[in-house]
Length: 50
Image (cartoon, rainbow, N blue to C red; front, side, top):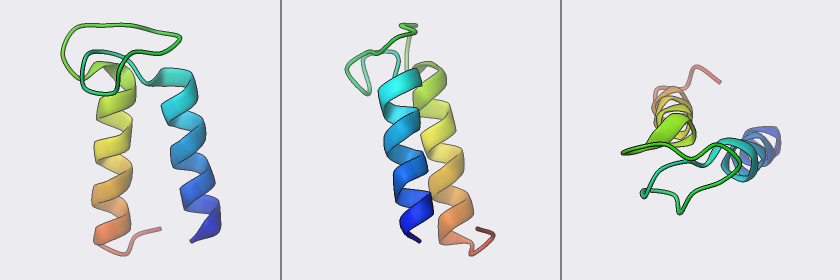
């Protein structure tokens, strides 16, 4: 569980793009790469696959 939280924080810091996450190293329209990765991670976490 702690590893997952650290992973999410790292992805937010590195890839948090778009307006959804306030931008990051790679800015893009909409959610951006970081937003998509975070959504995927949250879905995996909620379904118990991590």
